[in-house]
Image (cartoon, rainbow over all chains, first blue to last red; front, side, top):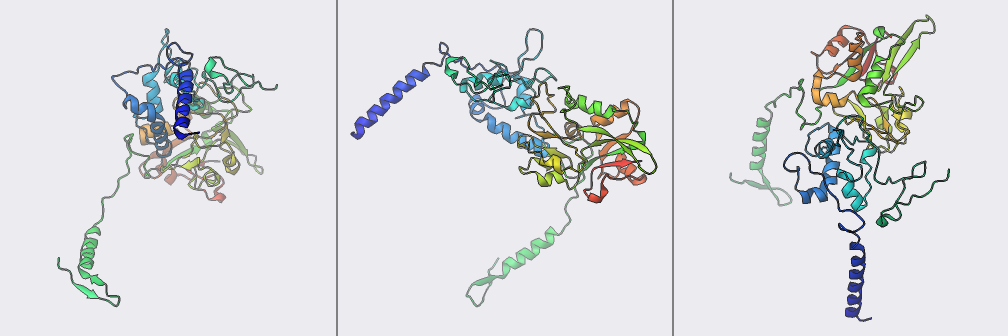
Length: 165
Length: 254
């Protein structure tokens, strides 16, 4: 096939596929656009674009400093992110940041990136407040058959891989 | 500076002016540098844990009653241990051990916890480097890297470490813990990093609150600390001293 023709056809396919998939997103699509809960104070420790792209880099370097060296500054501390961005329910109790629609989960559900931080870390700044319960889809199936990789995530419903009892 | 060059055999010039410069700077550098005074007050959070202090415990087994487990309760409450209410698989960062001398029948009891050795076997065997010793002597597990192989648990002569068998919920912010990793006493490093030599470990706090006063925490390297004075004045032993691990936790009256 001639190079120009091949390129044109490839471009057409790309456009078609993008139109089909991107149409799913957005306010009227099936995946809700993330809503980052505004934290306290005027602004975050980093600009939004920088935080969006680099927040894991900040967190991972900071965690090495804290764990290995005992440096406990607040700037990129996970605890501080949570204490600033956590939302409280009507009764004044903190809502876990990995619950559906909350601080971490809203972007991560949209990007379909599972996070396992809260298997260990507390999800609220207060003690013993439903921490660790993973509300977004857990990567591994649980013993009762729930969880597991969501095979049809773009349809909004989750299909778990059944576990033989 | 004029450059005098002497030609050696290879035809390269030797710059004796540089030699004179180096000799002059060496004498300047010989002036003794400032002596680092180890900070005994709480340090600023930007600074890493300093290498000056060495944290340790002195435990007086004579003040330890056989049935008492205040220290265990204090530690569990501080770190959120025992939440799964499953004694078979719950983590034990500190446990009470009863000892009986076979010949005399003398019985004593003491809390057993991570000894924070100077030469920790758990650090030596860890395949990933997750088990490590901080500059101030506290031996820790980096749970981001721990793969849960439990080699450190096998290597520890005191069986101080515990493996987390189940999914955990309601962890405390100061003590992240998770399934599939190994954990042990951290000498309350979250308190130590915040309060320095004025810190109170949870076990010491619980023991003092109950009025027993068996546990003493402090900086072994600071000759003015209570623990250093107590170690100097009174006899104490390290458990399994034959292993020559130079533990930071020492016992009296066992």
